[in-house]
Length: 366
Image 1 (cartoon, rainbow, N blue to C red):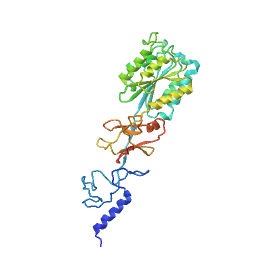
Image 2: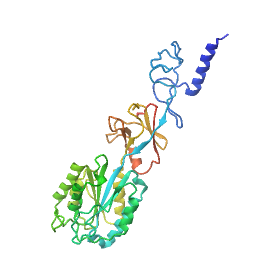
Image 3: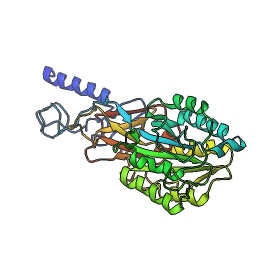
Image 4: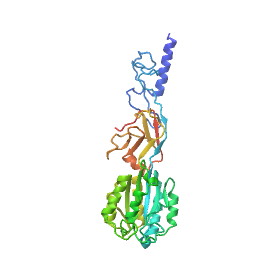
C-alpha cells in the first residue's frame, strides 16, 4: 500500500503537469497567444528536500529549486507613457501669402495635419512672422499667439481661420532668432524634444535687424538655425510654399536644422503642402516611452512590451538602422525606444494600444 506522503507528492506532480504542460525546464520562455510565458518541471528524480522534481537545492527558500525559476511566471501589467514631442509651427503671414489663394490653402493643409490621427504624442503651438499687427512688416517680438500645450490643435485651427496675411515682408531670420532669446515657452524644455516647423513662401528681405530693411543671407540663416540646435536643442524643419520660396535660404536652414530633412521640402499647392506637413509630423513622432510604475528593484530582464496584444522582441541593435524591436535608452531602465518597423507602425498610426508587463523573461529577438 502506498503511503499518504507518496500519494500527496504524486497529486502535486500531476497538478503541476496540468498547469505547466511539462515544458522542459531549460530557462527559455514558452509563449502561445493568449497565455503567459511558462516554465515546466524538468522531469528528473526528486532527491532534494523541496517539492519539485530535480536535484537542485532550494537556494532562495521559496519552495522551488533555484533563485527565481517559478513554474509559472507572475506577469503584472504596468503603465507606460508616450514621450511627448513639441512642435512650434512658424507660419509666414506676409502679404505675399495673399496671392494665388496661398493663405487659404495653407490653413487647409495645417488643419489636415492638426486633425490627423497620426500625430499622437505631439504637442503643437503656433507662431507667425511678422507680428500680426506690425505695419512695417519686419517686426518679430510678440509671444506666439498660441503657445505649445496638450490639446492646442483646435485653438490653432480656429486662430488661423480668424486671420488674414498683412505683413509687408518676410522676416525669416528674425522669426527664427526670436526663439534664441524668447525662452518663456515649453519649446525650451531641455527634457523634451522640440522642433520649429517653418512654412515660408518668400525670400527674407528684412535682414537681421528686424526693424530695418535689409537682406538675410543663407549663411546668416544657417548660423541662426545652428545656434538654435546647439544652444537650446531645438531642431528646425522648413517647407517652401509656392514659387516665391528662395531655395538657397531655405536649404541653409534645413542643412543646419539637425533633422533627417536636410533639404527644404517644396510644396506648390495645398495637396503637396498637406503631404509635406504629414511627412514631417509622422517623422518627428517619438518612438520612446517612459516607464512610470516599476521601482528601481524591478528586473530589467523580466519585462515585455506589446502592440495590440502581440509581444515586441527586445533588439539590442535598436541604435542601428537594421534594428527592429525595442531597447533600453538609459542605464537606469526608465525609458525604452521602439525601432525599425515597430517605430514606423507607431508613427503611422497602425498601433491602437501599447502595453507592458513585468514578471516574465524578456523575449529577445533571434
